[in-house]
Length: 115
Image 1 (cartoon, rainbow, N blue to C red):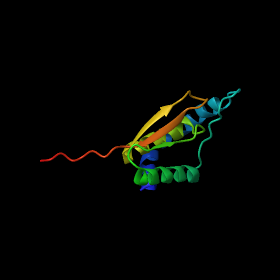
Image 2: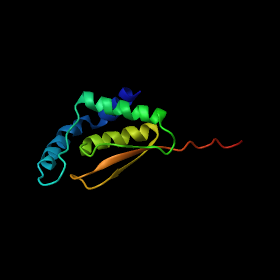
Image 3: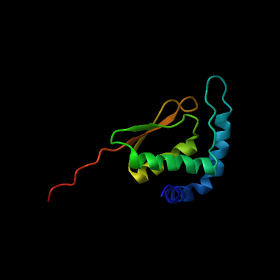
């Protein structure tokens, strides 16, 4: 499931990735106590999506999963889109280039209305 959804997410933005990479390279060169974002390779990206899919399946409602602040804005975007498609709550927190991270949350199950 995770691989299929990831491919659906990647396809529409495939052409944008070269422009995004150029922008990320510029952002990565900041100094001081900032975190250098690193693009995930295909295997690492798939592994992350698999972990998110397992979390979506097995987590208790309300449980949260905090992701690394080293994800690039491109990878965070993919995670947001994937989370949306599989029904997880998702939000980014922190300052871009320093400690920006995603928190995922298993949604409470809503009861079906009585007809």
